[in-house]
Amino acid sequence: AQSVTQLDSQVPVFEEAPVELRCNYSSSVSVYLFWYVQYPNQGLQLLLKYLSGSTLVESINGFEAEFNKSQTSFHLRKPSVHISDTAEYFCAVSEARGSTLGRLYFGRGTQLTVWP
Amino acid sequence: GAGVSQSPSNKVTEKGKDVELRCDPISGHTALYWYRQSLGQGLEFLIYFQGNSAPDKSGLPSDRFSAERTGGSVSTLTIQRTQQEDSAVYLCASRDRGGHSPLHFGNGTRLTVT
Image (cartoon, rainbow over all chains, first blue to last red; front, side, top):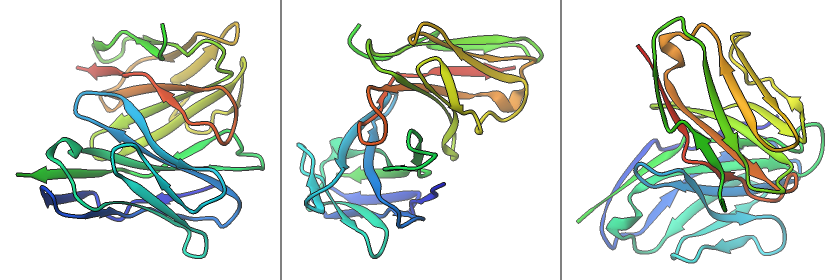
């Protein structure tokens, strides 16, 4: 089984500042990694995912995340945030094989608040 | 519809009553998941289905909680003798293959037990 740790429950930043939301997972077995975003009063949406290949993955709205196997991390970054990025962000991990193949493990979430 | 549909969107019930929450996954998705989202608690895994069987129901908090899935499609989550601590948003998600494909979430059912 996996555990997913999102180290910051709240991240307040000013508009146009850079931001990093941290995510670590527990196991070094082969994994798939995801970031989901939940805007106020909406359901969760996939932001980006790492399955294999290049360790740096990007979303269409300027976020990127880097898979670091040695540190078992998948931190989410954006060089310049907008007020519209205010949302809760969830890191999630799925094991690529084994008895828990189908299960997706989530972190507790990080509330990103962007101030003008 | 194109997405995962959950009903009702809101449910208020009295303590001790039973409730049924429904999830219609995306057509063709074989895997279906139930999660619970409470304030400050993140997403709590409840159960997942592969087809009609539930290989992992380890997250169900007590024997008052049960879920079923029929025809490889619709799923219902039943909570018997509801308690105030059951108040939360119950999220359903589906995906078409295991492991590497992302989950598609519904908008959830907000359950309030008074």
